[in-house]
Each structure stands twice: as C-alpha cells, then as structure tokens.
Image (cartoon, rainbow over all chains, first blue to last red; front, side):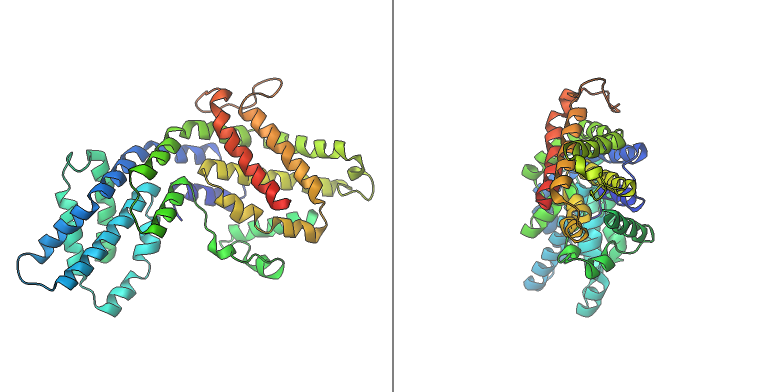
Length: 155
Length: 221
C-alpha cells in the first residue's frame, strides 16, 4: 500500500541504505500535514451518507427514475468516498489507485456505466462542501484535491 | 552466513534493477509461500487495510490512535536516528559479544572463521538493524516481516548458520539499541535527535523497537 512513509522506505530499501536525514525530513513533512487530512477523513466518515444522498438527489432530480438504478449509483459513490477517506488517512492516492481506479475503465466499458453521472455527483459534492460547517478550510482542500483526482480518472 | 549475504546482495540487485524482490530465489531456494500477499504497510495504511476488510470508512475511533502516531512523530524520528547513527557500533558490539561468549566461533572450524565469515555476520546484523529502523519509522512490522524475516530461518538452516548464536547476537543488538535510545547506556549520549528530545521520551518507542527485534528472534527460534 503506497503512502508517504512506505514510498520513502521503499526507495531507501531499493538502494540498501538506512533512512537518511532527507528521508526523515520527508516523512516529517507528511506528519506535519497530517492534521488537516485526518480531520478531513474524520468529517467525511461522519457525513459520508449525507454527501452521497444529496449528490444523488441532485443528479437524479425530480423526474421519474428507477429506484434500483439510483441505489446502485449511491452504492458506488459511497464506495468512492470511502476510498477517498482511506486516501486522506494514508496521505497518498494508493487506495484509490489500487482499489478504485485500477481496472475501472474495463468495468465501466463492460457494464456500460454512465461515467457522466458519477462525475456530476462527485463534482456536486466537491462544490457543495460547506466550510466550516462540514470541515475546515485546510481539510476541505485535501478532500477536494482527491475528488478532483478521481474525477480526472473517470473523465 | 556468507551465502546468506550473497542472497541478500542478489535481492538488492534485483531491487535496484526494479524487478520484483526475491521472486526468483523464493521459488528456487525456499518456500516463500504467501510472500506475494504481504505488502508493506505503515500505521496509516494498516488502518486502511483493516477498515477495508469491514467495508467501512475510518472514523473517529480509529483516528485517535493515528493522531497519537502523528503526535509522537518527533520521538519516533529521534528513535530511528538513535539506530541509524550507531549502526556499525551496535552490530559490531553484538557480534563481538556473541564471539566472546562462544570463543570457539573464531577458531578454525568455527562459524566465524575466517574473517570473511565474520564480515558476513556483521553485515547480516546491519541488515536486520536496517529493517528494524524501517519498521520503527513506519510504526508497523510488515516491512520487517516481508523483506527480512520471511524465509530467514530457512536460509540460515540451509546454510548451516547456528541459530542459537544468531539469536544471541540479535538479543545483544536489542539491548544496545534500547539503551542508546533511552540514554541508559553507560558513557556519553550516543545520538543526536532532530528535536533534542531526551532519552526518557523514547521509553515507549524503545519497547516498540524491542518488539521488532523480538519478532526476528521468534522467527529464528
């Protein structure tokens, strides 16, 4: 699992050296930024169901729709938000890359999934994050960065 | 022991060349079964893997322990520096301690005779210290398990390295590391932390470091 710390250790191990001061500085840097991303992860875990349902209500609107279809879409958005929660914890894009994005194109193509709907829902969540109601400024920046990362991967 | 080092060197060459580590040796030399399933984790990604198996996001309860990990980061860094600044000293002391207790080792026919075998021994000590320092920095033993312990006993058995002596050397390294980290060694303070923290602060983390050495000892027992 790629994270700030394991990346540093992997490269140190690749050259067979002990962690150097610069390795340690870079680990320290990731710790220094950890507070805001842990806050984002915590708030996201609290609001995950609300974010999901609000974005789905927005995407599906008031017209008639297939409830089963909407439920499946909600499940997927919830899944992506959970992976973003993991990314916020690790401080890297490892969980999204390994469990969300790898193989995503193939799945989307095989099942003919409407990526536009996912993108719309994720964009809605990104634009509607309430600062400081949902989370603080720094935390929201971390969260939005990962949403953008996922939106780009889906696009 | 010499061959063990040779294998380590080949592992390293593979790593440098970007190939997946150990794979070829794993298949040809030992039963490294399950190796491919192990991945390197740190305290954060450990929480992620655990949460994913439940399909739940990481909430406040799990975050509390991660916040402690972040809060103690400076102590953790100092503790890692205590190892990295004293590697050759710790390894050399451990090997000489081991030899002093078993003087036959350096006699002709002993396992540390001639010097190139002793040198291999020292280098293995440093390799173990290196993986302990990684585990300590990550706050998780998976890198140690995956890249050092996995197959170590089988390698030593195959090469005729006496496990009891190897274990003794690791024990001495553990004692020395803890003493340097907590500044309970006799003589001068042996490491410069970046936070000028005192050794007393490192007490908890020193027991974590000791647990990583114990992991290697258990694996060899």
